[in-house]
Image 1 (cartoon, helix red, strand yellow):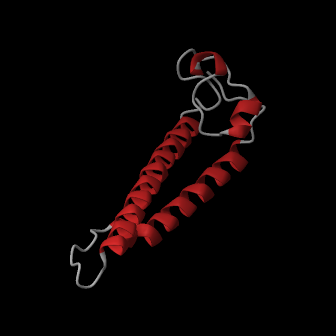
Image 2 (cartoon, helix red, strand yellow):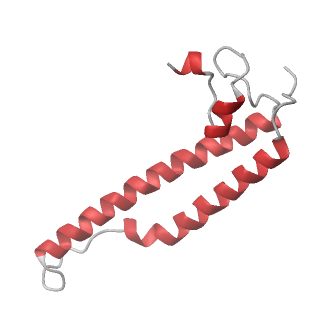
Length: 114
């Protein structure tokens, strides 16, 4: 399988590496929000503690989404290195450029995605 001529790999790599750096920077700034919520009701009221726990769960969910996106980016960069980018990981057909423009990390064609 040779590389697709209709894809600008250099631009795509730059976009993916920039997004990866943004996600990593954001993750570093959000680390304290996922920590343990204090159970001391003398310093934090019950409702405030519940709000803190809800905030913690939201931060954990964001961290999971961020990690999943980072994994997709790493897989895409590897596919670029292996000259497999732009081809369906299931059937090896070319993935439509428009689909790749919408989500550069997609690994399946529309037929295999459904």
